[in-house]
Image 1 (cartoon, rainbow, N blue to C red):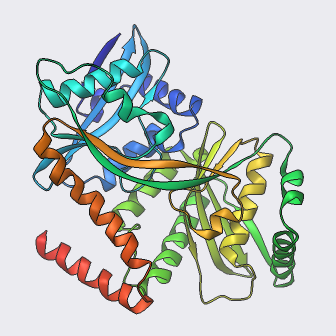
Image 2 (cartoon, rainbow, N blue to C red):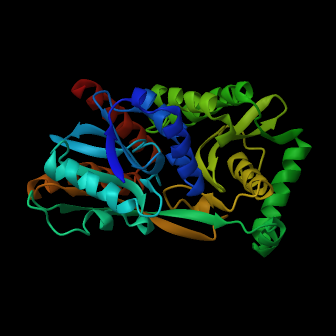
Image 3 (cartoon, one colour):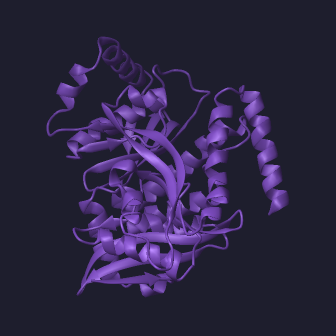
Length: 380
């Protein structure tokens, strides 16, 4: 086996990219697709970030990928997963036998080469046990790693056994079934429909509608922390490079789009990334967004997907559909004990923001986002 760090996208040849794609599909990791991660890198990566993709090969076969980049935060050089902050659940990809090689190369980058002060695994499934992998070896002569203890967030999921949609729907409570059926009847009575976009041109058109709806919804709240112009460009890039992996579901009423839901699919797993809804439209109960998500779930069963992933966060609407969950972890490993202190700051800020915003009124949230953006502009 051979581990090598790639620092430029030009050094990723088509054979490597195809094998990387196969690994992501085999492991059911849509956000680990090279098209998704590299589109993010081209458009939404931090301005001073440096690419660091770790590839492990066995002869001509790619058996492991560590899709990382380096950036600086609070005085530290951080090794972070491509797409961190934009999509959760991504992690290194490794076939049998490659996990130890990947972990050893990351330790060497920290302790031997000292190119990074901290390796942060943000939003990585706990069950993947990648942090454990970094700490399995005994301390080397160059030193040892120190844990950056992070925080956990639930990620609801729905298991979809073959030919089981009708059985699943009938197993739901009578109130749930009645609400879904009533909503679909209301949609039909208004001349509305659910629609799955087909072809790159239509997907791009619907992405524009999604951006409009999302911006409109969050404008009164001080703006969105998720959808920037850079992220919109990344989504458009991904739609053009891999349209078969992007499912865009819309709810239309006459000539008006009232909901757009974005989902990324690979290897039987479909992940709900984000939705945009027209909150001024109140003609559907239980809401255009919920009905659109239900249509996407029914279609996923027909498409022979086996897992519907609702993404990070325990919002109540997700548990209307979910039948399980796993935990995402924001944690890391530092090359020196002193590095663990500043490495905690971004996670502390995120946790504090979540705790505070749950208790704020819409007007207070709007003011908070206004001042956050003002401070970021002044500091930038």
